[in-house]
Image 1 (spheres, rainbow, N blue to C red):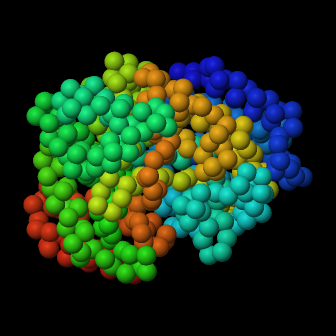
Image 2 (cartoon, rainbow, N blue to C red):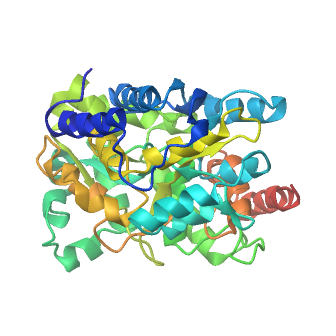
Image 3 (spheres, helix red, strand yellow):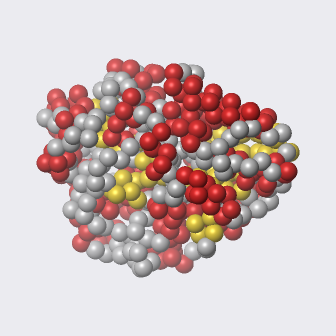
Length: 451
């Protein structure tokens, strides 16, 4: 499927043409070491057509700089991205540049070269990288990767506006309009209790909400934002185990009720299952970036025209949105580190970032605030008109990563070991008491802190 149409094609051709002409904006500077070969391992994109646009941009850059660029797209399903990174790190061979999700950068920092010069150039040109993203890649006093132009995403509420209105009496287009004219009272009513009541009504109507409670990334993401909204943490900011708390019990109590009105299959879902669930027409809501909508637009247009992206429900401690920052790191065994550095500078340029944002139909969120004003994709994407407007954070949501609020390296291990999804499953599927499940998770966290 070719998505390089309209403004996307114009943006892509502008960026690609600039690369071919060698007139790229600062801070790109071609060095004498740019020639040679460069192998990239990047994430296989969820939105159809996005890989092709990225590959064309990278190959055009390679042609202009006399670099033979090879791009391998690696899926995250089944932990393939992580397993590939582990294999390359241990073998000391593989790609030159590798895409690393936020929890992977701390894991491989010992094999990633410092790229402070690159990131400092980028920041000087476009402003600071979001603090949450900075925490993921600025480790031991050095940047261990440059910002990726793709796959930076958040887990918004993605809901069938027609089904919520018909069966739960909630008009999501009024509560979260495609404009800045929100009614604060209606937004404040969007909390987990309201979501749970709606989920019960939708379950009774045969149109349940769905969210994975399995050891996968999507599960960790939506549960992270729910736990944070209750003030519940596995490990606190000081790196101390904090799972035995009233807040954790309150979150588990809520999830026990919510799980009863979700499909039993959520315990076996992978990272593609929630997409399939909403696209099938049976599901009424998931927590996800707009990839489900993009595929539905192609395969199930009757579903796509009703999908509305909006804020995550609020809890007693506030409203949170899980955000996945992706960085491209250079392995210390890369044979062309000079060209790799040049490429990192190039893919941070606004023309490239916007080209990818539009190719992904709004999925890819920039890591720089200055890049957001360069596109109207979230306001213009559709159908439905305005359906993606609130995917770009507009309200009082605070961003977080899995493992919040633990220090970054501990949070990364909590995420990778899927501690929270396993805790929730032990209670909601296994029937364990809160005390027994919390005792289990404390033992698990002891291992996390020792690793």
